[in-house]
Structure formats: structure tokens, C-alpha cells
Length: 73
Image (cartoon, rainbow, N blue to C red; front, side):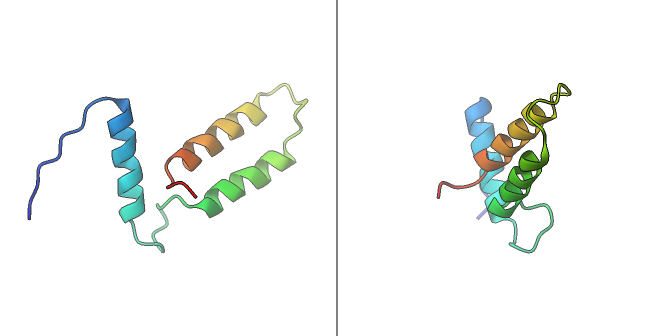
């Protein structure tokens, strides 16, 4: 059952990344989960939005990337 898969373009590559993440066992430390999104949200709650360091924007971008790899709720 060997199949060759070809992907091209950012959308297809990202979909393949999400599929690969979903295929990981639930106990694999590399698997991104909704708990990871919740963890980043907890970090966001601790960041002062007025801080000029840009940490809030960085954390929000990380949260959005992790969430995008997960299947819809």
C-alpha cells in the first residue's frame, strides 16, 4: 500500500502538516493539541498588552499557528 503523495503550494503543505500532526499518537510529546493552544492563551493572559517588547503579538502569532494545525472543533 505504498503511495506517492505530491503536494505543492503553501495551502497543501500546511494541510499535510496538519494531517501528520493528527497521525501522531496522543501521548507523543511532539503532537500539537488544544491543550497547547490553552497554554499559549494562559501565557497571553500574563503578558501586559502595554509592554512595548512585542511579546503579545509574538505569542498571539504562535497561538494562531498552533491552532491552525488542529482540526476544526
